[in-house]
Length: 494
Image 1 (cartoon, rainbow, N blue to C red):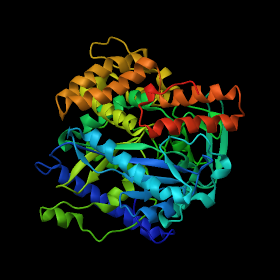
Image 2: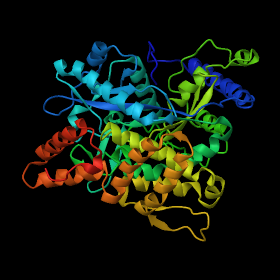
Image 3: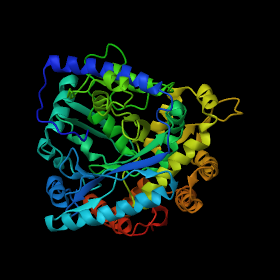
Image 4: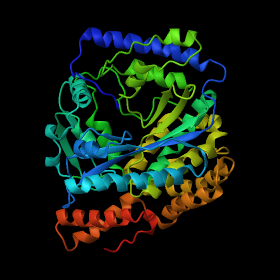
């Protein structure tokens, strides 16, 4: 969605032409995927980190366009709401210390952006949902004034036909309605891109789908919204509901939402693109001049701009990405992890999800045959709601019967397997030891960002008002975050 458009209204004919072009791109993708050697090449990672901008009182500061104009960095982009920014990190070959390189680039970027933000009264915070966010902070005025965001909001609201409805339970309950998509901007994430071999894409994708609930629980960092203690990873519920374009009055068949976990175990890369094209109507029908078939006939790689744009307006928690660069390749975009608490914590989450996926990869045909997909989806929402306290249904090769298992038990078993799988890659052992040690620290201390936030806030509740308690907790969080100290080493006492 990082595109530049000039208008927010489109005709029915434009939508029809765009949909036809997406179908043509799908045919072109079939030919590409059948091309010998397509998508082979060295594995790599990339990442995007979204941030809140806060003022000295630790309230949101809606100055993203001003900061971006001052920084002048093409890797820095504005987000949906004016108090959010996103930094796109450089791709790194998956060898040596790719996450250490990513971590250093991220720390340098945060420092540089903060130098420009400070004179404007702003500072970046990587955190899933800002604890001091108020409902009054979010309305139509806070949307970044760019046509793509207005077009997105109008199209989703038009498809729904009524305001978005948000209902989230947990320790507390929240019920809201919204007339635009700005509630979605309350969520900030760490999105990891992993380039995988095209000919085995489905196996890699299914492996990521299987292990995501475990990583999500350990990474959880969004336990509150508007002063309500909700899910350990409240973002998962909020994101899904804040842009759910399905009309509540026309539920003639169980149409999946645009934010979803999946429609079943993947059988091919192509079907993931085809499903998004067939299930979800276009939102922003921008056309390119490319003739994808002609490009393929010349032996080149087309951009498939319409297919990629359409894919960018559906939001599965793990998303298939086609990229025409480097001879054309496929990536898995792992989208469920929250931003924060620290750069090193985010990198540990990234290495663990890849290591865990590699650990189950060779058994994935067997594991997906004994675990119905809806159980993995169930695991995902349990992990989001209960975090490291969740029970999940986890398949074993020699299992007679599926049963509930504590998520932390599964994490303990998976961690050494992830370590061994990573040792068979080109990643340095020091990187593996350092980052998986952080995951181990969270498991053994029974601590996640969400749990730390919740425990710290509750300790402040004893002597302060709820508003002051959340603010005090955030102040402590930011002091720890600036030291880049791994979360499991943070003290709980204020």
